[in-house]
Every structure is written in C-alpha cells, then in structure tokens.
Length: 446
Ligand code: EPU
Image (cartoon, rainbow, N blue to C red; front, side):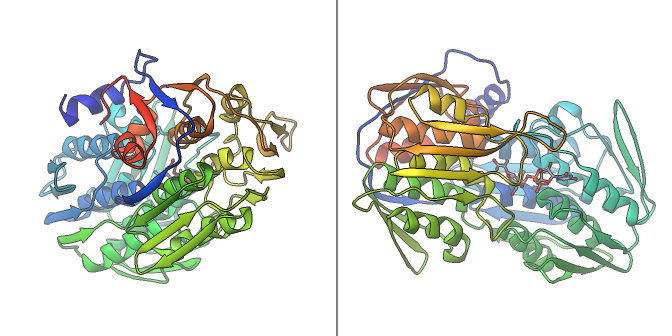
C-alpha cells in the first residue's frame, strides 16, 4: 500500500477490522530516534502559503495529518512533493488559486485552521468550515477570528461556514483571552504581511510556536518576543523561501520515555531538547525514575518502585495536555493516589473509561460551572493489575495511552480505531517493536 492510499484509509475513520494487538509483559530497552514534531511540521506547511518561493522542510514526520495538510496545500494551488524516505516535503505556492477551503480537506485536521492566516494575508480573503481534529471537548476559534477582526478583517459566520475579508490587513494590538496554540500561529502568520506593527498579548509560548516564528524570520518576517507572552510583529511586503529542519517532537519523546519507565526498562532517546522535556522529566523523577540529559540525548531508566504524583496540565512550560493521557498508565502502576487535573481541555479524560476496562482504578470527577458533565480531574489509585481487553482509541494521545497500558497488562490488549496513531506517530509499531514490545498490527500503518 502506498503512503497516499494508507492515508486515504486513515482519513476514513471506520471501525474496520484493523486491530493493534499488544501482548504485555516485555521490558523495553534500547535506543530510539525521535522524529520531527507534528505540531510544528503542520504549521510550517501552512506557512509555505505565505510566499511564492520554494520552501523545503526536512525531518517532517511521515504521518497521516501531514499528508492531509499536503493535500490541502495542493487544493490551494501549491506544488507539493513528499519524500517519505528522506522525510522531506518541498512546497511551492507560486499562486493561490482559490480562497475557499475545501470542507473535506479542511475538516481532516485541527491544524488546517492555521492556513486561514496565510491565505487571508496573501489573498485578502478566506472562507472555510469549522476545522476537525480530536474529539477532546469544545474547540472554538473565537480568538483567531477576533484577532483577524482587530487587524481590520470583516468576519462573517453562518451555519455553513466562516468568511474573513480584508483588502490589506493592518497591524493591531490583539489580546488573547487564553494563549491558544493555533490561535497564536494563525495570527502570527497573518501579521507577517500586515501593514504596520501587530502586538499579540497573552500569546502562546509553546516550543513549536517559537520554532515557527524563527522560521518565519528566516523567510524575512520581523518577529520579536517569541517564547514570551507578548509577541511583536512588524509587517513586511513579502516573504521568501527557506530550507528548514523540523524540531524534535517532545510528545513522541515523552511517549518513549514513559514506555521505558512503565515497563521497568531503559531507553535512550536521540534528538531531544532538554528544555522542552523538563515538565515531563520532573514528573518522572518525582515518580521515582532516573533521567539524564547529554547533548541532544535523554536517557530514561525505571527506578526500584513507582510512586504516585499529581499533575496538572497547563500551557507551556506547564505539563503538556498532550502527555496527560500518555502519563496516565504510569500512574495506574504507581503506589498511592495520584491526581490528574486537566486544565486545558474540558473533556480530555473520557479515554480513562477504556483504561478502567483494563483494570485501572481511576475515578473521574465530572463537574462544570453550570452543572455540565465535564471531566476535569482524575483520581488514580495504584498499583492496579492491568489485564488485556478490547479497547477503543478516541484520539491520538488516548490511543497511545492504551498501547502503553497494554505493555504492562497481563495477556493481550486489542486496540481498535488504530488510525488515530497514524495521524500523529510515525513508525510507532516499528519503533516499539525494536525496543522489545510484542505488537501486531493487523492493518497497514502509514
Ligand atoms: N480555546 C478557546 N477559543 C479559541 C481557541 C482555543 O476557547 O479561539 C480554548 C480551547 O477550547 C481549549 C484551549 O483554549 O480549551 C486550548 O486550545 P488551543 O487553541 O491552545 O489548542 P489548539 O491550538 O486547538 C493545539 C494542538 C493540540 C494541543 C493544544 C494545546 C495543534 C494542531 N493542536 O491545539 O494538539 O493539545 O494546542 O497545546 O497544534 C495533539 O497533538 O494531539 C493535539 C490535540
């Protein structure tokens, strides 16, 4: 099966017969190279629409979401070539041939929302339907739209979609109620070609945004304050092409680090950035694991016993919400009571029901300001004896959480809706197998 066909299948989420079987009990040891970050590569691909020059992106993870984004860029008229062997994508958007985003392609990922910034800035118009992505609670885009309005765009919204128009975006002072990741990216990219200075206050400081901003600067943008809550952008007339290397994926790195600890093993991660890993490494240390950093490597070794720890997810440099589900199986094996406070999304603990089917002792406190049934805090009591079960992925991170739980469960775990893994993790089964896991994917991974 070709990458494209596999992605087409992955993008058609049906509960098909594809099952990932995980036979637990093996200790994971060895070395693994961490690939490029999904949440950086997807935005860098969107940024290619800001210039008519060629942009070369290296170390791009070959995942389904990247292929979906490549299709979206093609729909806008860009020439896109994807080289899976070299993990390289080359894009040239000489001209943008349409300003209405095709709904099916736009809905394929959440990241597609960031193309709104470049297309609006370059063409003066963008119309689109709400983006898709993981089902982890409400995911509005009011901050993106308000930012465009502050920059002089007229934004119209009805039940069919959203349209933003501005002959020329104007620099503005924008305040974001919350440091939205994609919101910051969409506004950052739009403001590079606006006339005058834009200030984005309460901006997101996630590492992927710092990296994107540096890439935009190499394309000729004038951005300062990256990594701080106040980003300043002086608009320029045009941006030029660039060749970039995607930064390593801290979420993929975190996944293998947790896999080492939960299976009582030892893994060396190659291509990691220590400063991006600190929120996780601190929690691993608190739980009793051993962690060392050297150059761009991280060595993680299980300790003698796992102890309960509390985590709360927050925007960077807080503990990442994207590692919350991944960390949960580890807490099921820790001695004592751990509390997990999910503070970024209102409903990102639903997958714990699947862990409970495997024998985990997790109680989710569901409450909301207006009495809604929202899942915000999980109380985990361990260690629990996990056993194999047939479980279902709800999104990328919960899929991986269930695989990690399967690694320490007795017997065989069968995971369905495996396509979620293809969306975010390159060569997942291959990498885990090389580390000693016993996995069998009955379908064709991307
Ligand atoms: N929010 C609003 N209004 C907005 C935007 C966001 O209320 O206009 C709220 C959301 O409802 C949510 C919170 O703000 O409660 C955070 O949302 P944010 O906009 O920061 O998230 P995102 O940009 O949609 C990205 C990543 C997510 C990651 C979050 C947090 C991409 C494509 N997605 O989403 O990644 O969890 O930032 O870091 O970059 C994943 O990779 O599995 C994933 C879900």
